[in-house]
Amino acid sequence: MEATDRTGERDSLDPPGWAEFRTVAHAAVDDAIARISGLRDGPVWQPMPNAARARFRQPLPVAPQPLAEVYAEVAEGVLPHAMGNVHPRFFSWYMGAGDLTGALGDFLAAVDGSNLGGGDTAATAVDRQVTGWICQMMGFPEGASAALVSGGSMANIIGLTAARNAMAGVDLRHEGLDALPQPLAFYASDQVHSCHKKAMNLLGLGLNALRRVPTDADFRMDLAALEGLIADDLARGIRPACVIATAGTTNTGSVDDLNAVADLCRRHGIWLHVDGCIGALLAIAPRSAGLVAGMERADSLAMDLHKWLHAPFDVGCVVIRDRRLHRETFAEEAEYLEQAERGLAATEFLHHYTLETTRSFRALKLWMMLKHHGVARFGALIDRNVAQARHLADRIKADPRLELLAPVATSIVCFRYNPGEMDEPALDRLNHEILFQLQETGIAAPSGTTLRGRFCLRVALCNHRTQLADLDLLLDEVCKRGDLESRTAAPRSA
Ligand SMILES: *Cc1c(COP(=O)(O)O)cnc(C)c1O
Image 1 (cartoon, rainbow, N blue to C red):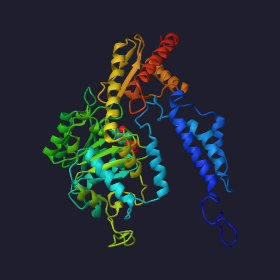
Image 2: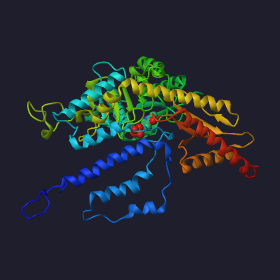
Image 3: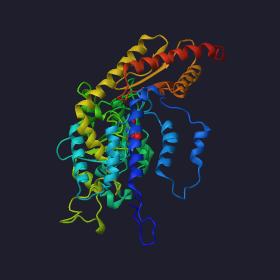
Image 4: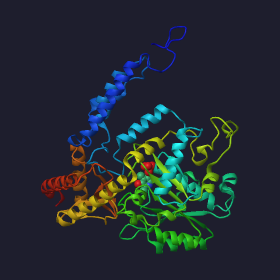
């Protein structure tokens, strides 16, 4: 029955009759299942024609439109032009392939409506349980704390803020940067993710306070160079505050020597932050966990659940060894947010551990995914991606037309088509052309990067749907297109 007020107008956003909503919602779920179960047959990605873009230049809607029509527009105009990271042959950047259990969790979290800034709710209990599970998965001891945030960038910002405040030597939270007795220096390899530059900017320390440590042939932080930079800073009266080690760099998947970095940090009394957005979850993979040995010694760790756990965007997590330090970095009291003895506010507010006050119920999708699939299954899928990366590297090494451009440490493979007798600019053009063709035909979607000045095709295996046949198809297509293009391109580059 239609909900009305005295003037006869609709008085809430609830559907006037529930039947229409039920029909559309059920259809949306059925369509989602059909789309995901039939993924392999469709393109990974397709360019958007102008006609499709025009749909998004409509005027501001003032009057209502039936839900079925709105959904039809989404089904026709939005969903066919998705990123494609759910597809088995999506290999770009580093993102999870999604999971319907997690998607259901996001829907149910939205319906539940709880605000994870605090409140004595089951949602808060789920959040506490999930963050506890994550600490355990990462090998952190009792007393560690964790907070779910929007992603790895925010997790890194939170970890680095805790590091800055803990290492400042003054009550930085109250006194501010002007009170610093010594400037602070942070250290990270030249492969560190760009979000750390944003963090340095935001923390008021400035990008120049992030010392870039060169990497060795394996793209791992050169620890002798790190020692040298620390000695230089000490000699200049600068306080070495934090080393950011990376467990899984974005370019090549390399992992810094975490135990050695942890030893060095302990020797110098420096905070160790690990950016594990890519590699932290290796810790739950039985055959690959050794790759991130030492990670559990970090003072803070940033990780991403929307990468190798495949949780729908967006969810990352920061883990901090010392709960008290974590809380002291962010806890702010307010008379309207007072913890109470009884009632809705009778539990510690979760916003004391993050920058946000209001937070979505991200924990539910993780709770459902971890329970439904079990950690062992996630670990096995991660091991499988690592094995697939090795298979791909082996095939590349065996083919004289292909050149591996970085050692494969985890699950990222960087290579190029190189038939020989082409100069660097020509190889750069050729491999860009191959990349564009793969993406535009929808056959596969690697991304590109440049390593030591050489452009390469970059295949990130962070996909629970990828099979070996997908990788074989990828290489066959690279070679086919490379053969064709190099034959036609040869006169131009001569
Ligand atoms: C993805 C990534 C980030 C940023 O994480 P977001 O979830 O995209 O914010 C940071 N560091 C590394 C190493 C990454 O791969």
